[in-house]
Length: 95
Image (tube, rainbow, N blue to C red; front, side, top):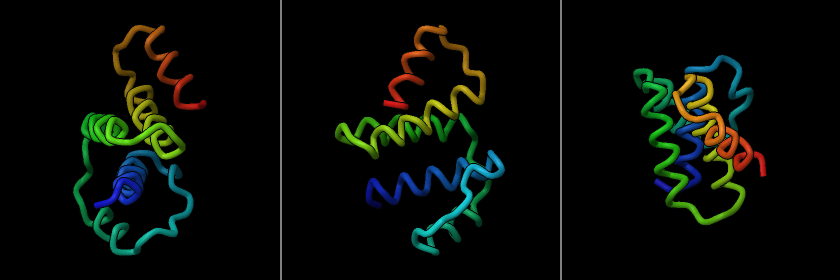
């Protein structure tokens, strides 16, 4: 699976946790069908998957988007991390 497909999969999986997060989807229909048929992936796993994907990507738009997804998971789950670290993660995701 390509990096772009993994990003789409991540977004669709995250959308199952957050109503309205994915307001439109124009990617491969079979990918959406696959994710729709899956059991709910725990948020902690989505965060770990996002960081793993991010670490495979070169600097650029897709890496920043994936990092934003990971940060969103952790902030929304109120992960215990120092405020300074969380600020750095949020700042990095909006660059």
